[in-house]
Image (tube, rainbow, N blue to C red; front, top):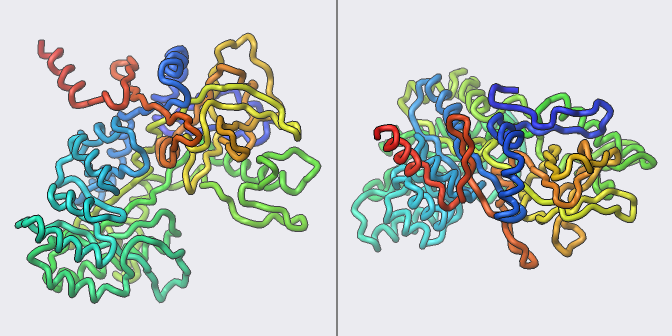
Length: 507
């Protein structure tokens, strides 16, 4: 574990199956350990589920990426991506740091402006309607263009608004390939195919007086290392050609897709996956996932086939280290020079959008236990006062053990059989966890269950008021001089707090 990580649950029996302790930031671990009664009080006050945001931690994540820039003597901008989480507290905290804001809708553009981001620090990505484009152009934000029609719409709207300044823009590309490596990438909805580069060059040359071309960009949610390196190499090649054509590109934008770790221990994660697969071989044994679904794996005649439908929870190279890896790798198309060397030598900037990597460890989701019961197949179900939309993502499953807080320690009962967590919707598929977990004791009515590291893409990404159930309130928790304070998300304003503290210091 790193210096800012800790384990909340220290008592882990060695014979417990499928133990997967979460990686927990030291600040969050201290808060859970020392402020247990306050957590109960906050859930009583604001309801269940409750999302707890620790906005100050983003400063550490930003600093780690900034250190990579400094190591390679690079200029450019780190963009905080607003898409993975809607917390105002995080956006306001980020606005005080040396980062930009990557927004992906008209609403998120307005939120970034309101949080204190100057338009020069904002990049507009994602699919765009004309209202979104118009606001971006009016404010002077940078637009990351997704298609040729969008580029034409930018020109039309700029003319209609009688804007004299050029519109800063990136052009997002897709469809990367290489003669050195054969792969079949999944089709995607973002970007212009790289084969259309000649048409893009012609368009940019024809409209140099209206568009301030920043450079080419790409974004992979996930990709093997070689694919990402090919994309970087292609962007650099096209950028050099753009400069030769007199387009004056500022740099390249390599998006995000930098991984994070959810599990505290690598071997525990590897053992977890092995146990999950092994449980599918023995139909007479204990099922370790709901209805023996396999979480993507299946037993075919004694052979385990398929692929996991969950993300890797422990990865050796994450966050800023992942960025450093790609910057240091030799590029065959540039005689083995690295991207960092080429960018520095050519005085080109590097732009990144490290999405969930900047949100790593920034939040937890707390839910109250409504009941526990036994299913018709004898499984222990713990019903939570939340539903699957409160802790769900379109492409991720969180498998780590949650932290349990109990109101009555004396009444705790052992839980050797393990539990599944279910939601409060009148729907049979409202499962919070499809994997069985094995807490030290069985959660009872009124206890709290805390899911760790839910800020990136999990706590509110697909949240809805299904069946009139509530969406989660958010509160921001801060620590200074050893003291924890909490604020409602909408009322947390770190600039005002800092000004008040400075005034007290000067009094």
